[in-house]
Image 1 (cartoon, rainbow, N blue to C red):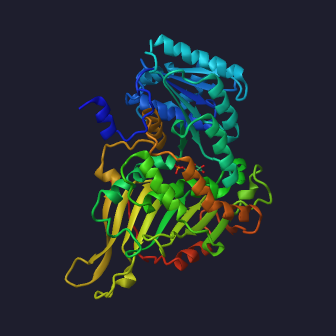
Image 2: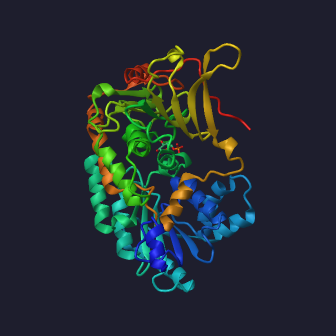
Image 3: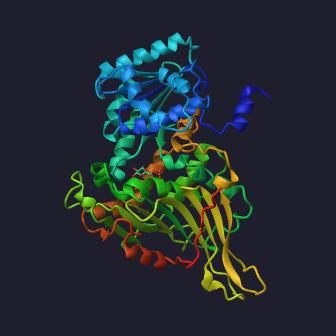
Length: 503
Ligand code: BG6
């Protein structure tokens, strides 16, 4: 079989017309900022440690406005990399040796021409064969500068023969029209196959498991629909507030920060139909379809909250109407899901920190054990912390009596996959970018469909037509959210708690 045949049959990646080999330059723009220090460089270091960034092929360039030397940048990031367990100092030094720094502005050619020069020097020093060099630009920057930075890259730093890819991260706009404007600005400069819109939830282990679970297990296929499922919750809770990020958060709020992107991506994977294949375009086609089947959000399906003390932050407006908590019911108008509420809940400064998907099944018809009041079957996928999935079941209570009790079938990753290190989301996603796999990145039409769902509600909030209810920090959020949950049909099991297994 020829190489071309092998690629067409087994490779589901979006392979540009250039080889995935040769010298690789990773350029982190905004290199001295928080995202770069806390996420991008640590992810690159992890990839380096695992041999995915071989020193004879790779160079990493930091670019930012701050005047710094190479050593100055290395000093700034060293602390974040050195914090981790078992860091081998020689390995760390070898990694830092790959990092160079270029300073320049985000909207003038001068800095970008210099950047191009240092990248080219690196490429020719490696004797890269023509057409085999790769340039990955990671924009760890606020989206306000995306258009000018992308324009500069296009004008000054394009790879002449091999590929050029651009990684960007939310917020992609504030509503449908601003997001579309940003998309068109970037779309004029780069093709969709060059743009990688990161949503880091798509890099989480259990999120990546969703398609496997749903479509590789016969067990779930006949159950995953309106005939069997009563409701589905997608929940994100944090037990800390917006400390240190109040200024940013107040402009966006919990719906734009978490629900419209992270939770909606999870929703797509839970609710979409089976894709034709694992090709990124087939998967993303199905995600778009389910998003387009979501009905407009009714005001009575929304509870907003703002924790007490949020406005004490001097960077937050004193009359802020920004929600730090939201519970929203989405309804899908299609054959599989009509009548099944999808309840999204996200909040800051709550009583716990976790993210999970909770699929609640309908009651058993003809309940001969009279056990209905004990609770319903639930399938829970705990995304974090303590990755796990468990199925809440009714079983016979062990003993001489014939009585029932709630228990669970439990797959806890810590116990089942002892010694396996679960990769960080950013680590996987950067590797996907290098490999040209866009499966776990958001396509432009997907982003548009996501904004279409939430924009009318966001405008009602921005206009002050809907107001958040106050809640105590450290609580479950406004009690009205629990009422919305029961109104949507969720039946709470009292007295049953899943305890994550320990080793
Ligand atoms: C970010 C949000 O996208 O995700 C933050 O801006 C939030 O507000 C964070 O804290 C949560 O990510 P994770 O991976 O810790 O769940």
